[in-house]
Amino acid sequence: MDWWVSMPKVELHAHLNGSIRDSTLLELARELGDRGLVRFPDVECVILKHDRSLTEVFKLFDLIHILTTDHETVTRITKEVIEDFAAENVVYLELRTTPKKNVSKGMTKKSYMEAVLEGIRAVTTVEVDIFSEPNFDCPANAGIYARSDGCARNGTAKKKIYVRLLLSIDRRETTEAAMETVKLALEMRHLGVVGIDLSGNPVIGEWITFLPALEFAKEQGLLITLHCGEVPNQVEIHAMLDFLPARIGHACCFGEEEWAKLKSLKIPVEICLTSNIKTETISSLDIHHFADLYNSGHPIVLCTDDSGVFSTSVSGEYSLASSSFGIQKREMFQLARNAVNFIFEGNKVKLELEQVFDLAAKSLE
Ligand code: 5GP
Image (cartoon, rainbow, N blue to C red; front, top):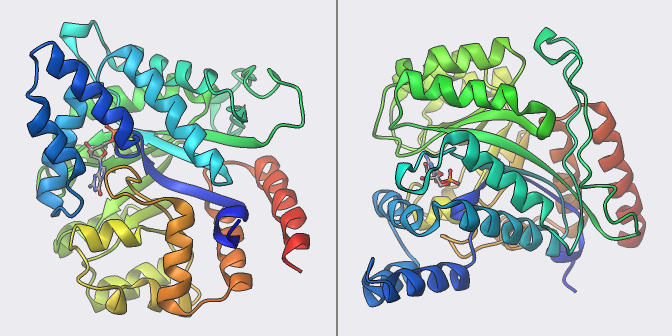
């Protein structure tokens, strides 16, 4: 097995509906096609197209959501996505998804998330830890320290993956809708929800619309990651950095001033190489900011973004970074290990993950 597959890895930027297997999407499209709800050949063509601009990606998500937004399918894709990440030795996964309403399916944001939790419980190929450490600084958390049975269920020496959830706010949402998502996250924090993500088409929506919900989330002790600088919008980038999120994703369209600010604030960056190249937010890996951030020792973590949509994997991202930037196996291992510092979890989980990496380090020698 290649070292980039066998070594333990941490995935912190993975969108549920972007991480679906092509085979599952095609199966779902065929079913809807048989029922006359979509034209299968058209959908097949869109699913199998591999290079798409950022705008096309969001059109694809609208199509994916038509195929997946019912409870049973949400459960299925959650199970499959976790099993796929575990199969390539992801030991800690922060999976993000946008809670959705679908009146025709009787779906509320809460029932959507319950379907996600059901998918986590349905995982069979790996032991899943969905236990979340409480943030004792936050009064809202007192007394809700509970353990899911996910970890204990199998009780064997099976491989283990920690799964935590981030609830995404879509930039198309209103302040009220964003607040509803934050309140749901707070309600579900004992079930492995550890934070909030702001994502969706970066040319839609205003930062000011989401700010009240994000501030409330922060006050309540949820950790926040923001899609930041996917398009050139210097005012928004500065406002986002001033908010002091716990992490940001992408950072593709930063100018000198923004880099200086990011570096002085030491905000970790989730780097998604394949996604950035395929969506053409960065024209080539030669000029990707990974190199500068890595060389300057800025906190970074390699992630997939949408492993299904961009036909990639966490292992693939490590292999790509290694070959593109000339980084050897030992340094790549250290990069994977450093990601433990940026997870939205407490010291207990961090120490447990350190042990996983210690053990794996022995086989590197
Ligand atoms: P979901 O939240 O439905 O599980 O995952 C898909 C959603 O994640 C998309 O509809 C979009 O809102 C968000 N998303 C996925 N990939 C990207 C990306 O590269 N950039 C941004 N800004 N949002 C994304």
